[in-house]
Amino acid sequence: MARLILESAENRGREYRITGAVVIGRLKTNPIPIDDAKASREHAAVRLVGAEYMLADLDSRNGTMLNGEMVRGQARLRSGDRVAIGATEFRFVEDPEDQTRRSELAAKAAAPPPPLAAASPAPPKPEPPRAAPATARAKGPGPFERFLSIVIHVLLFILSTFVSWKVAGLLIERLMK
Image (cartoon, rainbow, N blue to C red; front, side, top):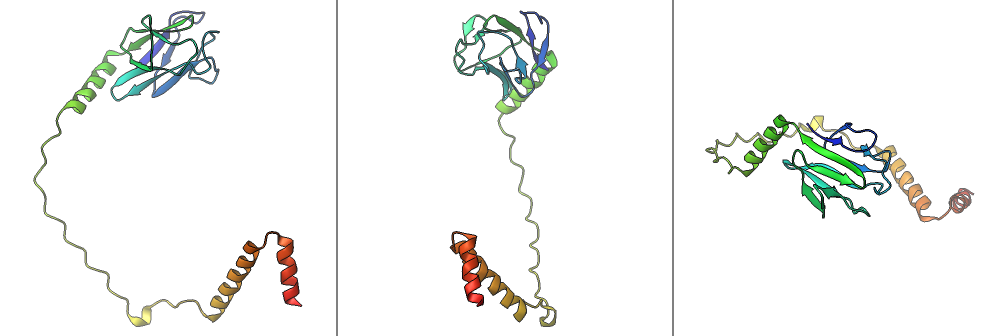
């Protein structure tokens, strides 16, 4: 598991696990909140991209430093790297088994695809459905259901055509007289 270890400030030694993507900044709701006046609310992010951990500056005002150099866009993180945001400094650490697993994933991604296997015969085509006997066919709506459907559609048309319910109510009242 990759993590950032706080190297400065009062919480020195505190560890933050990197799972997916984490944002570092002054906001208390950030996965890694820091109390640094030179930090933006959402200052930087660490995320796993493919098989690599990447550090990205989130257009912060004072910038993000990686091993003493300003990060432009994003930069790859390696175990032991130092990340500085204002006066706050972190050390990026990655467990050896995590590095091995990511290296294996990267090797698989770079390897050529395996050869295609011989095509298997196509499965048999299903039989088309048979028509039900004429006596078993479902009946459609009866005359009352059709009349009710027409009345509902006419009422919906009237209600949707007129702007206010009051106008529609007056029209229906006049029609009923």
